[in-house]
Length: 414
Image (tube, rainbow, N blue to C red; front, side):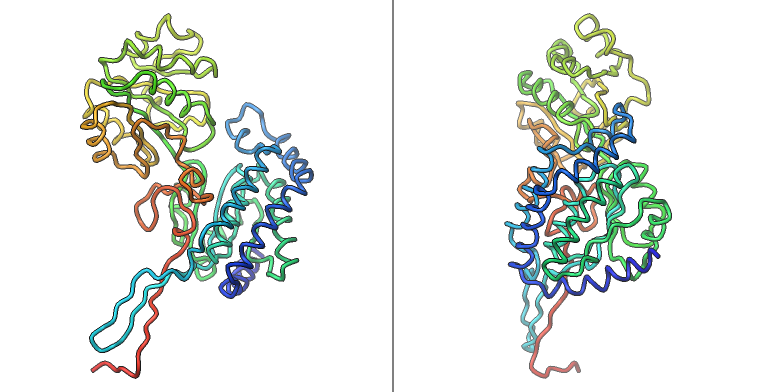
């Protein structure tokens, strides 16, 4: 059954290369409008999913849809429609001595499979980016968001059918494990798989897929407050990176503080108590915060406090004596997603930027900005933490590969 779905998607993908940019953009805008006009049914479906989940589950916030969030999703889709097409871009052109012309041109992958957890907004993000880049998409959402995903895909299918496009260019698979196994082994039917979610999901996909994989999602993010850091900037950056949305992959997990600035640590963490953030502090940080941060929210750090993606109102603190020690900590525990430094020393900032191995390296900026829309990409299909093909927020250009177009006038090789 799953292979039949995938075969239909592969067949439908061939229609996409025949669509012009105006048609693609028109369909994306119509889909965004349809989402807003049918938001009542989407929110009802989402309420079904929410009833099955404990509100204390860190995934609850990711799962929840609101009128405001649906408006944001629709706006992102319209933004994607307004962006230049990534297709048919001339990447290079060479004229050989024999007159043969070789052009390198951007083309779609073909069929892109995305496996994700309790994040129904990913459904529209993936469709809009894949459709704009000429790719069909196969969606494998989690059971937690199944009702929401089906309501969203129903809207996509209705708009595609109205415009004469095969709805199979966007296929939602069943939410069971069998569908995941079939997708991971769909050699010849799927060109690329992108997992979005927890490190356990990403590791499972990497270890079991026979189809090429781009790893995205897992974020163990640090902010280093340097001895030359501005405490006003640091206070706002730490609070924003930690509390803006705790369930996202760019949220702050560990604050690294220079020993010389422990006296400022209560001020740096001052706003966190407003959100009831639990802090797991090493011995020097614990001593600095004792009596100056709520006792019920302050706990001693353990070995498990570091290298953990909390996805919750929790944060670790590590004290270091130098930039090099901070860099060593990041190198050991980072998932190579997003790392930040707060410092007024350009020399220190430049060394941090040079030495930190991550997709996004910030200076005096919150890691919350690691997001395709915030980077001006319209939306994102994920944050790649690997180095092959794509790195950081993946948007339209990263959803293309290329082929060589060679033209001549009867040349033969001797």
